[in-house]
Amino acid sequence: MFEHLVIFKFNDKITPDKQQEFVAQLLALQEQIPGIIDLTAGENVTEETDRIQGYTIGLRVTFEDQEALRAYGPHPAHQAFVASLDGWIENVIVVDYPIHS
Figure 1 (spheres, rainbow, N blue to C red):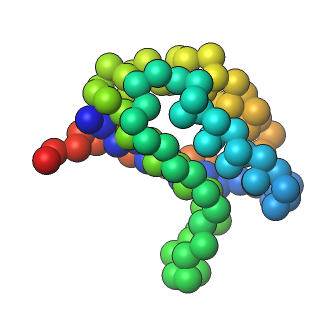
Figure 2: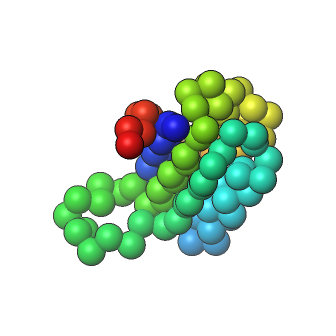
């Protein structure tokens, strides 16, 4: 299995409603893209406000294997989400790693 973590930092034009829309789009990916075992997404509610650095939405996706992770990026549903970020996003942090039992 592989874990895919993404943390989003939006520009100052973002609204709470738009952030919720992005979270809903992310959650819908689980039903649209094969190879996803589990997916969670939500707004950052950390109390460590000195560490937030403007990153306000997190995504965690567990994939069956590395091939499923590789297929995720070019999948049309993922590409549609990426396109919807245009004009809203300031930065993104991505971490992918294998899960060892």
